[in-house]
Length: 145
Image (cartoon, rainbow, N blue to C red; front, top):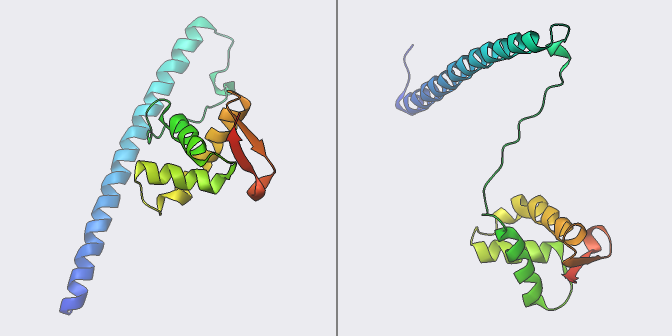
């Protein structure tokens, strides 16, 4: 099959992408084999300690992968600083915008930071008692306690 120059670059890019995906797939299969082997060893060890037990009855846990955007307590400090600087109750979006501006992630990061900042505000409110929420949903504002 003859390709013109425009398709030659597209074809090369598609072949490159396919090779990358194939490599990832092979790596995942290798990891899967390893995990199945380790699970077999654990099941055998459990059988030594509890011969009547059923290892398959043990419920699987979802692995937790922590995203380290901020160091320990840094998001707390950024949120509290934003509330201190404002001096008046501000919306969740205003807190998000202040945190994004302080860190320098750029305006596109605000959408991805929404759940993280909101969770932090709820933590600071319910667990630490450092902030107070007034109102509900989008109309909610936050202030220092």
